[in-house]
Amino acid sequence: MHIETLLTFCDVVELGSLSRAAQQHRVTQSAVSQQLRALEQRYGRQLIERAPRTAARPTAAGQLLYEGVKPLLASLLELERKVRDRPATIEGKVRVATVYSVGLHTLPPALKRFLTRHPDVSVRLEYRRTDQIYEACSSGELDFGIVALPARRARLLVTPLGEDEMVLVLPPGHPLARQRRVHLRALHGLPFVAFDRDIPTRRWLDKALRQQRASVNPVMELDNIETIKRSVEAGLGISILPGQACQNEVRARTLVTRPLEPGPLRRAIVAIRRRGRELSPAAQALLDSFAADLR
Image (cartoon, rainbow, N blue to C red; front, side, top):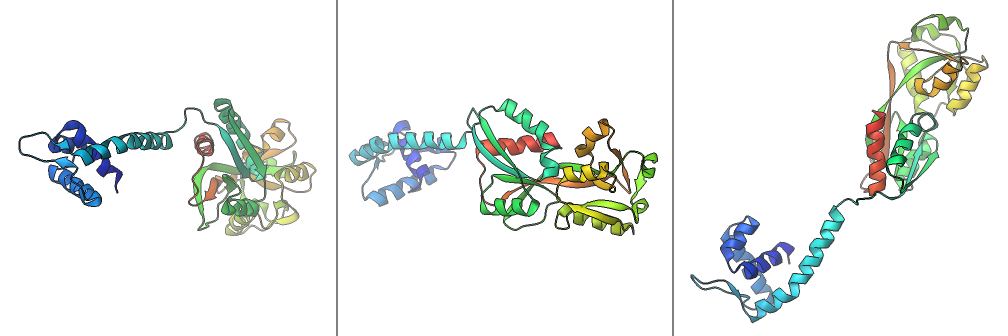
């Protein structure tokens, strides 16, 4: 039995007219008659007295049905309203994981603004490797994850958040620091502190260097952007990192950054979550906030 049919029946009883009930529901009078016939066939009883030029009145069976179903419909409509409406106060727990290079430098200001606006939300932000984030999102362990350079996965939905500009990172006094912009070909043969080979940013940078016929000399391979910066500061080699991640060191003059050519060299930052999973109001609000702040 359709709820709309019961609503139409109640309106016929209250308005005393099939035509006015039809207008109320923006359907034809014939459609209302068909709905009433379907109800009467279901119960095997006449529910509405129909007579020319008289009001449509419920029979005894119709009155019984009306009095029983009216409060049930009111409760159901109120429940539907509550389900559809977003809560006035966003609250609850959200579990998110991100890669170090985004979580340590890009997210904190955006997260701070969100928590100021929504103090009743508790955010558990974890730092993981990219492959671990994909696995945790696929299993439903996380509300969503944040990664760079997304890979296509059938079970995951991707939401673009923004981009990081990648820059050349040098120790002070390095000869390339005298240039305003540095071409990737100028890095050929130089000692290079790289990301681990299984990190998407490493594969992406290797491809960009190959396209410019530049082959660097990886002297170290690390999985953490902070240890890469410390290695460059120690003079072990140069690197290519998100510019935003190096701002403190540039201000302290322990590192120098230069834009790259051909450029700008940008990597995509996205949120991933399991396909078919509906986010809680708190998780959706956090994702929307990141999408607005990081663009």
